[in-house]
Image 1 (cartoon, helix red, strand yellow):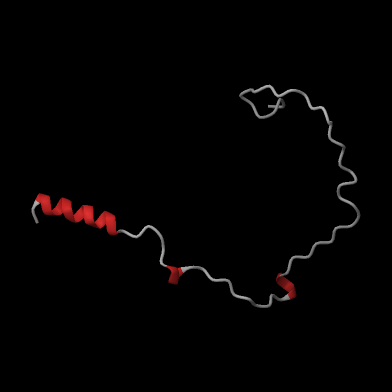
Image 2: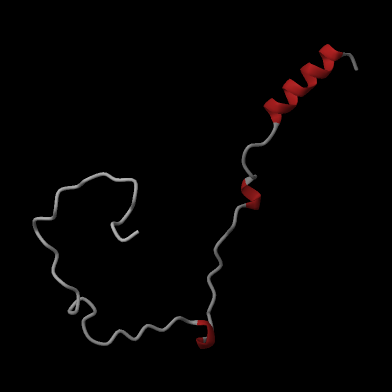
Length: 72
């Protein structure tokens, strides 16, 4: 191959190259039954928001700094 034909070949190859996977390889969901051993159980007792302190309706003005918090 000459240098010109090789450059043309590389240009064509980069244009033909696939960017995404074909639709046949797409992940498909399968509906099935999961046994009780693998199910997530949530037992929320009471109101979890009852212990949360109320938010101040008038927060302090924002002051941009290099740190995320004043603790560090």
